[in-house]
Length: 166
Image (tube, rainbow, N blue to C red):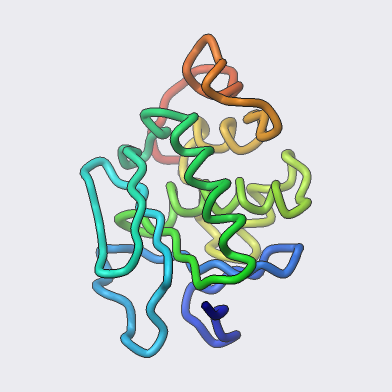
């Protein structure tokens, strides 16, 4: 087990010092010099890599099909990022990946209302692409069990389009 080097492409250092890599799958496979030990893949269709992989069903420009599954997977990779090279990826590496990294930042101490701005400043300026993703980051109760949400969105509230933000 090891951590990402400070020169890793897509590296995000969370406020508590944990390091994760964000990546877009469409850009091709990662450089062989620094492969992840654990990957979390946020795609509409199942995705796996040669290293330990976990998949969350999450359509492009949308929200996870199961928020409780997403929160469980994100909590797992957050915990593991203290000692392992963790990567989070979606097709483009911006919307879903940015949303996931913003949620990790919340566990690392970033206030809910600041997490989107934080990930845009530290990862990609267009991270978290839709209003629905922004609401998820701001409103998701990460301290309660999302499987008990009556709406199936783990405490996220509000509705609206998941169209890309301009």
